[in-house]
Length: 486
View 1 (cartoon, rainbow, N blue to C red):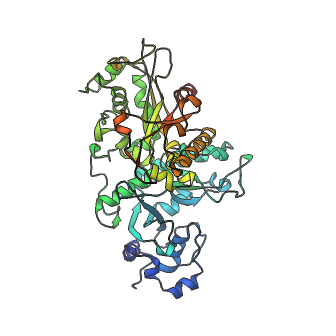
View 2 (view 1 turned 180 degrees about the horizontal axis):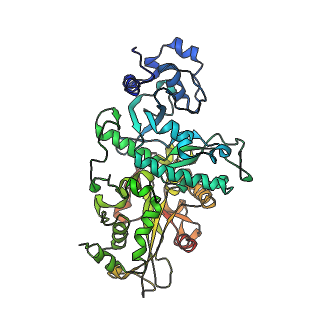
View 3 (view 1 turned 30 degrees about the horizontal axis):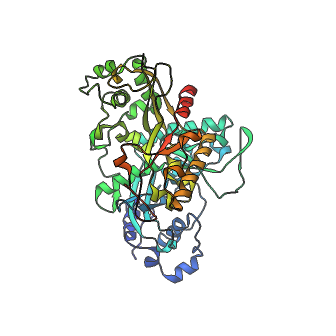
């Protein structure tokens, strides 16, 4: 096997290409494997095996990047295959570096181990298969990924949010939903001893800096669009596509030098508070049908994007660069004149195969969903107090706008919600009366959305055959408490 120059990123990248389509068992001799003492199945084992057996450098706890001379960090990250489409998908967030609560508060972002290690990474994507030993997992892509300047500015703000919370003595309250791209995820095994934090006597769970699954999905999509299994974003021209293709930019690097992303978005709403939807749409010279059911959402998209997104098809704000990488969802909240919430809030349909195959709450789709950031936009009708708004949505007044993430105590309720769903999916008890419902007066419930013909026997059932398509919902009274608290 050829060698590489450890001081040259391109030499390292070229050397990594030989991994594609192979497993470590195919590339490393049994003698080397036995001598390495790395046959363990512990989490992170495959990455360690790559370091020691393929790239042949000693495993260490050095705070710098793995290839120190080249300033390049090696990261292995798993893919899974979606049963519905057969395509590769991100399995989980990318864990980057442990958070030392006591030392990190005296470091700038540019001095942090995360920045020093991960601003330039060699990402090795492999297909995760639970039943297989790590030496038998196949490598799919190798990616030389330099975090773009604007993404680093977003992460710098995320870092500041995390540090401020630690300084406030709230390290035990840190949540992945506090931030946009860079998060702090739970790390370690259940029952591990909590860590000391510097500004509070309350111990905090061990956490690591990580790139959110939503961010990693955009990296994977970037790789797929290249149509080759070895990709570098350093050589390619960034952001060739426009807003309609899902990579449009809402803010510039220059704007992020002085304001946070969320502040920029919220400032755009300020002039329209107290104005009705018809006024808002006319302000943007929109040709949208003012009687459309989703006109409130379209108005919110136009404001947040400064007129770039009209909320239709590929022009939804969730398809823009920042919303996709951060996993932000825009939700409109229609309320009656009295302030009563008109309806419960629907989310995505339940992926029964994902629920069935994933037994880790922190890696679950529901956990990612409810630790994401939401841009909540409340509209209130000036006179209607009950029933349908009909064609009068254009009269709705923009009342309140805020970013929100589910608080940790509510997230524990969400875990019970997920456990109930998973138990019923595993036992093939996918029936509406088996799940949490509105009458239970919890924060969450399960029910279909859409017409009866659209959800009957229309979802893949991992137990065999098909099942009715049901959706995650937040109860209306819980949504009301969210609005009132913000």
